[in-house]
Length: 244
Length: 244
Image (cartoon, rainbow over all chains, first blue to last red):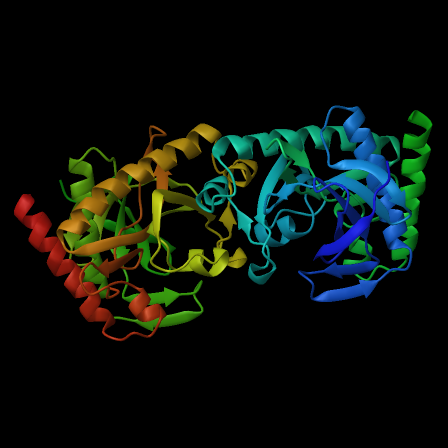
């Protein structure tokens, strides 16, 4: 069965979405080289990021699917493109935190590096104009982003994904500090993991050296952004490609 | 039984707290004339505010107590001072919203004046240095501000108070848009309403004209701040002093 990439229907900060001419339930997700931070205020470009993030994200989504987490991922089409199910996206960023970092330390004064146990699940409204504000469950319900049951399901799924990812990153010598997920509904209205998981959307610290191996290298001008991303890919390939 | 006002143990933006020499479980709460907004960035003074707010708050606390809500209020000592139980305060501002206004409209883009049904209960961390950040339940639990059960009790109490206040303000021709509560624990560890309820801590709109009758007159430079507060007191006295 062959697929023809159709027209561009969405362009975000890190991805382009295209229709699939033969099947309206499928889309092509194309990874971009652009790097953005602080709600788009800081912009950059990393040659080869699209390829690295496609490989990382695809390996992680295959691993999650093998372990019972439904995701939108179907197959890799090229170095920078994947075929996925089309989801009706829920306008929430679901953040899971195992260790205090980033906005949590700034907003709530928690010291960076402090372990968070049990892990914290947070919801942010996906709205660039409002700066993706943090939401309580009650606010998310008020904004009709989901019912109480939907939010509980998102939390359960996020925590299950966290457990699976935390273990696999630990095997790679990486501490999964926090990460962001996006979910949507498939044609049967089931909640399914969408978007991507990559050093753009995770904080990953080397367990031995404490070195940041993720987008914070770009956010904080730490240098060697590309090397950090490639090192994460190398470690994932060593652990996950041996397994599969 | 007579009480001697002891030493100043706390001074906030709108109140001073003094010990009571004869009884360590009691305190004197003195209302101040100062007006502050935007986390203390805007400052003002309103001669007579302490007297007006003391009267409003005392009448409302008596009304709440008569209707089964435990509060710290014992009795009025002077125009600007009340005797209360000493509580171990919980470092949360508990906000109840019936109508969208203020930070909710700015943060989440909800239109001012939109009815919120069911009413929304929000928690904010009382921390001036951090700007009183908004908290989810999970964050409040992480910060050890209370257990899940404590937070549910705070929400239940806040909604009960909301129902009682909403009705009484409606009788006065005022729409209770939103308000802030603070709770603490008494010597038996029971959760009790503390602090004050006044036009400093509520948004009150005239039901007929829509006019703002609260601290927004100061925040937004609408003028006639004192007249607004005094009008609220007049209406409360008409409704509550007749009842009692």
